[in-house]
Image (tube, rainbow, N blue to C red; front, side, top):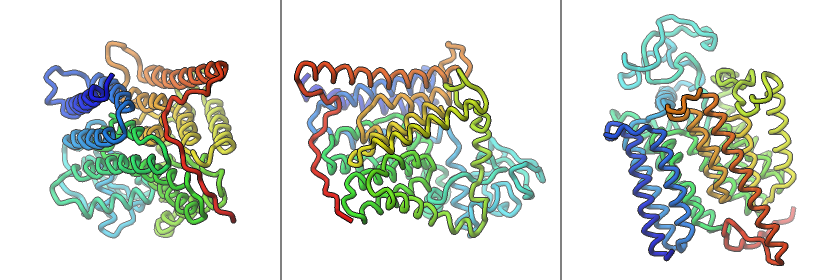
Length: 480
């Protein structure tokens, strides 16, 4: 296939992904009434083909295609209200509360003290979450509630988002014009996704890796749906994590090491999941990295701890219980063999062993490989049913290039929506099938790589690199 044909095919893939996502987020423009699950599945298939085509195009031409495709896909996603999540309404509320000079962890949204901040956009009779006047709830901690219906999910519980996320919500509040609804939040998340594409192109080139790997982030349907359409703050955490990995991979000085650790700490204080990256980055100056991560996380939490004490935990304990992590029912793969505390114990052991292996064998010059494995194994064990958690996994795949791990990002959508109706499967079985398929896919590709490498070695030839990369420049590590 000539390069011109690949360019044409990649351009067609961009158009097809954008078109399929448009139908997904605009169901009123879908005359055939094709289900969102089918549209998303088709978008993933076209994305896979398009990414394959891009890898055969020259770097100069592919960079333009990647950026144009990433921008177009985000614009399509931003063009419609959120389809699968109402989290961004809590973002808007938390920003408003902070702008009024109130700590976001102090009161639940339905609290009497915040009634004066209500407006017809977030609080109206058509809101899906209703509170009865004066009602009580175990998570309310004695607060008096004012009745009403709202777009804000779980209005009777405290916010769950960490301090950097809360600062992001406050910034969004100040730049959002009145009457624009949720569009600025979604546009900000879409812009973050585009900036991460540029960061990947720069960072991959700086490290001597293949810039074309950035297509695995820029054109990914999950990035479009969870950033541009649903506006999830996870995209900010993914960007900070990528920046931290790029800095730490070339941390030749103590200052750079500390800077990388601070970025990772800020990522953790945006969404807790980037803590999974930590074992992979401790091989070089572990004390400096650990201090920077802990110090930056503690620094942003400290003002809130002083203001509200233990309320900074928000709904986190309740969330873990609600999702079934406290009783072990959320571990759908382990649940085939184990129940209750046995499943919890097995999950902790698997994650601890994986973390120790990442700590022991991670390459400090390529920490993303161990970070990807640690994150992917965590997905296989915890089997989350919220697809936006997969944004962290997607950005790690874009840095490392092992696309088979994207199966766990796909599984999150099956967990949220289930399989198409004709399969008549309960949600738990749909989740189990999806995550089992992701595990099998990763294992099969790993075995194929090992087999090919072994055969090449037996033939007296060096093992083939399945992920093309240009040679890396030597890293100079300062003494002391």
